[in-house]
Image (cartoon, rainbow, N blue to C red; front, side, top):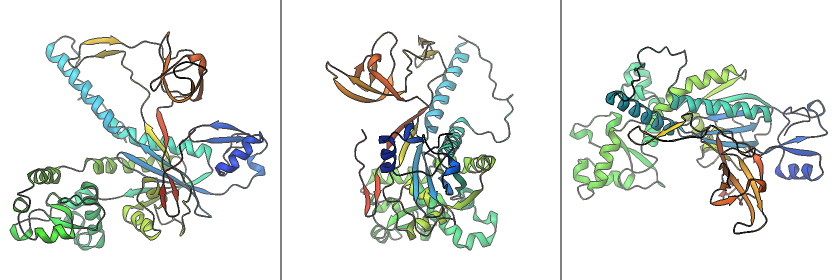
Length: 435
């Protein structure tokens, strides 16, 4: 909620927002996240409380929660889905096409990978997008809510220490932290699932794929997770003998055991750069570990969710977190389109050219519009992202609509929006459909 000078005020409930809008005391300022601006109030005439933004960085999804420090109420929850893998795939495709052109000598482009200087703090594009998405939404939420502090989960697990614990001394190897880091690593790598039977709703134990009695090691590549019944049945038998009737499961376990934890590596590569960028915003930044987050969530009996993990980060987490009625805003990064004007086939040959114009009748692809079609096959109200067509009807999903029937409710900003499930006291229930 904003005052009439666009200064952030304390967030209000949806019922209060409807009351103010109905009496013309406020107007809609943003649709996503939904923000109203008051017409008759300034920040000097209001009581503004301290809020803390908490961030749980992830490789695919980052959870963000805003907590009112005095009462422990979660006033907003956001989950940002990154597009790092999409960027990597696009760069791989571009690299292959350029290499093919050089080899065929159809168009020479001198390689430049050895003569470029990288600035301090440089990240690969797929990792840069993750850090940029988080920082973008921290800055956007700061403009809409009086945020005075930040918390970030900085340490989750150390892959190098798991492969060679001696690098930090015998104290680290024998301490409780090493055991926790190992278990969290395995939970992420094996997706909280028993490797042998696939169960997820049962306590899991650390299991040696090749038993130690048969010269198995304690390296991470020889460890997996198993439920107690599977662990007992396997005993010290070789995994090939235990799974001789399930060759597909055996192949999957061997393949996954050797695979690196790419998502964990992505988080570890960006965590310190994200921390430095958060410090540059001027906010005091509190750091928390994965162990503290998991402990806080377990003590408060909260289910596993990205935004709930974010709310439980750090020692500053209130003793009681009020999360009842919170409906997380799900944000998916989709980019701002492509810069290339020429599209190619699988072999790198041009097949079509993109138009130079991006706007038609005041709209661009990606705008969220509401269409009121008075008659015809698609008569009625339709809301969604629009795909523009030059000189013809637009598309909203499968609905064809003329531009004169459209009204923009949110301009394209590189993200898609939807809502998650509303949290209630006895669990998570499906949210009602959005109008």
